[in-house]
Length: 320
Ligand code: 13P
Ligand code: SF4
Image (tube, rainbow, N blue to C red; front, side):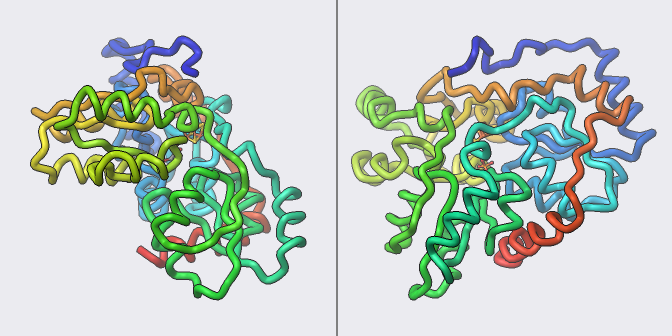
């Protein structure tokens, strides 16, 4: 699953020279560095803001910087480019894709819509700009439930592309959704048996589960009510506010660094050490430096696609 990448990151301990060059370039370019919670620890540490997909899109919409160096994956940089068309959005490595976003194309979605005329299309943020442009609403794991609940109950909903998130949404909203059968290879690999093993070994710990996990909807049922299904950002807030001292974390392991940094003194353990997204880990400090220095790789979205995709994103952001 992890392609041999250590969750702590291979380029940890980058030289002070790289860090001071990034610092200088950030000032000279009037740049902001945004990093997703799954980025390498040292990339999180150099960022101006670290967060989940929802928080990052809100930051991208609000920043006054001229340049956004986006340390995340391609669909996230595209979302930033859609929200801030007057800014330069840089992705330090174009290999930073997303296997989940790759499970549906705009042509496939058009075909699905044609089979369900009048249905409301809700697309998870892990989709290309072209797919968002075909959608009524965008959503993230942080607000997917609120988005579904904002749609009148008598409307048919096409939800895509993550089937585990879709199944969890059916469970918590009590709605029937038509669900695209896509999955994230990292989260799908976290299975009910991984959770079960931990709940037996560490019965006092709180279990934090991302809704993309292959075990999300089952975990709610079998962990005696002590499972929390949360976006990565919600995990940080929850751990901070909880009286518990020990947490088992079912998502990509990059979040452990953020949790340890922002909730010191508590114990965080990934339920699977190999739940590592190789796309997220392609970005290193050296690539952030090169990106700011050479203005690469600029992510742009065609204006007509951006305008239509923006409608779906704005409808999501309007829900808070
Ligand atoms: P979050 O929205 O929780 O940040 O998740 C994004 C993602 O890519 C999950 O794999
Ligand atoms: Fe995509 Fe999965 Fe990586 Fe998230 S963890 S960016 S969904 S491949």
